[in-house]
Image 1 (cartoon, helix red, strand yellow):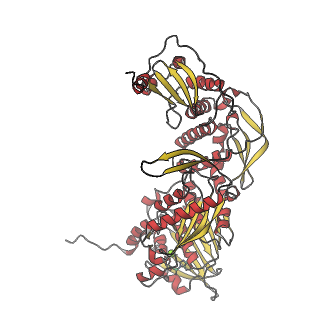
Image 2 (cartoon, rainbow, N blue to C red):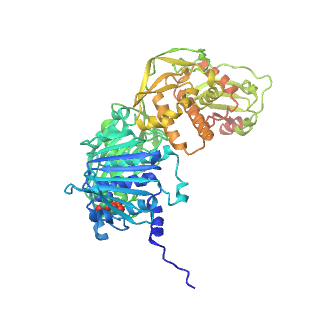
Image 3 (cartoon, protein in one colour):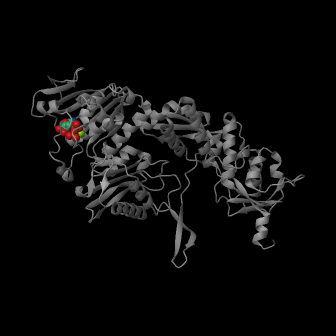
Length: 610
Ligand code: ADP
Ligand code: MG
């Protein structure tokens, strides 16, 4: 008895659809790409409930005649190629002729289309019996495609749809990427009927970057001067931000290769390499790199959603990216950066190289008046006060015997901890040196202060003194970030950061905790927006706890004294006393140790006393 059966076409189509359409953003991508391929100069995108309920893309492109409209939902129906050989000279996005067929298998699709020369339009839809229905209709020149009830045919897939915000974010990324690839076309994204992204036509891609990333980013942007690499038939252009404008994730780094948005971590690494050693750990620029390459040097037919491509000479492309970025930064950043030779690294037999580190200008502090209990006791001002002589904090009456960090952790609730130390002073304006009967204890002042502030922000949220800003501070914020942030403003309020939405594109800061008064509050907000995006899939209480902890740690990190801040004796003593009160005094909120002991025995060994 034979077991093999040929699947009915509509079932086979659902399987194929599963690969091409995993989420609403993939539908949007295919529809926008078709509009671009149809040479539309204006593309309007509408979504409802993160695209789950409705997606609609309206273009003013060349439209389809009735015959094409009837065929376009059929699998492998394409006007773009006749044979695979044509891929090497392809300029359109589409070539497989399967997007519309897959979309029709996954949701309910309706197409209205009209060519300039015809007086009547065509409406295409799919009946419950899976038949294609063609009707005459009135419609504007171009094509208008609506997709509703995505995955109603595939309940298993429907379960994997993410929260509305997550889907919106993915769709926004697609719209950003494609509008960066085509700056001269007009893109508008409407989310639940509200205009969320408006990218009017621009002549240059740097202007498009500016309209996408907003005014806060614009004056940190550098245009890359076009570089050509003859061997690979490659040119690179685009824009990147100076190291004065960085983000906590790579979501704003776009690579467009022959106008396709592609993800490729090697290219990402090459870009970051171009920044040399000037990016702080975990911070990333905003960037849009536009690569045009001889189509014979790439293979675009490697990924079901066309998100990846293969390069014939990947190393050449990566090196060219690094060099272009490096050259642009070298030429543009000198006025913003102060180079301080900090370290000579010597490789035996090789040349001695000078590694330079770069320091950034601090953001200006916000002017303000202080309200609520002005408990400045926890503040360790960053003033530079001459060092006093080492002093004895308190002599231990009953000194503890501590030999290692591990052993220290076991006594962390012992408030007598501090008494067994004698403060000797500060090393390199970064470490506090303490004498202990078992050796030398070294404390990292930043990690220690971070811990102190973290505990303070956590336990005394309600009593944290805040500063009412005399001149309220406004922060530009994109509409989509605002939409994401708006339901969670309370999170900030609970930490004493009083922000409110102000108009369509701004936030207003009314008060901030005194400890973070010198911290650029826009950074905190930007970082929080990214966390909201990242953790949106968590359930409500996990989400709130995660964001609270992250915000609390970030405020502590930003407000804490830094390595290189000279501290007076009183400031050091204050810090030690406060650290002593912390239940988790042996690590900072990020898990780094606040200090460690160099055992006396080791010191004696080094000095050959033993
Ligand atoms: P592909 O883009 O790979 O050809 P699709 O399934 O996306 O496959 O589209 C099938 C065909 O339908 C296209 O080749 C094109 O001829 C036509 N088509 C789709 N969308 C549009 C549109 N917005 N305007 C004009 N023609 C379109
Ligand atoms: Mg297509």
